[in-house]
Structure formats: structure tokens, C-alpha cells
Length: 65
Image 1 (cartoon, rainbow, N blue to C red):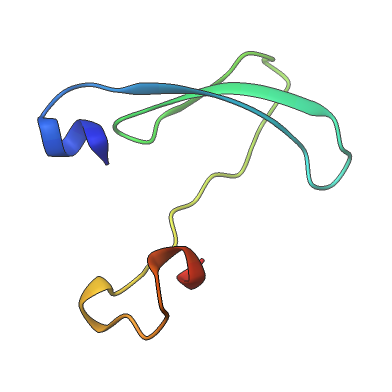
Image 2: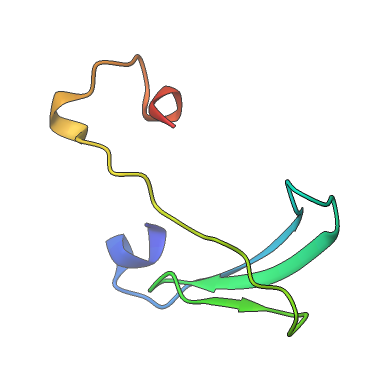
């Protein structure tokens, strides 16, 4: 989001673990939501929830997730 607002390319490094097997995962996600895992065997499922910001019923966007 920050990159789109500033019209800049942004990449973040994510360190997390698999919800299924608890194996550590490291990856980069860029402004276009392209995922590059450091471990070639890692195949994470990444998605962006569909949230209607103009008709948000929750107190904040975080509660919508």
C-alpha cells in the first residue's frame, strides 16, 4: 500500500511459520504482491481479503480480517 501511495516500488521481507506444519518460512513480497520465498520448496498461499472500505461495518480495517 505504501508503495502505491508514493508511486514507488517497495519490497518487504516476511519471517513467519507455516500454520500447518510450523516450519519457518522467509519470503519477500513486492508492491505487486509477487512472492519470492527464500526456500525453493516453500509454496505459501498468499491472498488479499476482499474488503469494501466504503461500507465497512467493523470498527477498523484490522477487525475486517
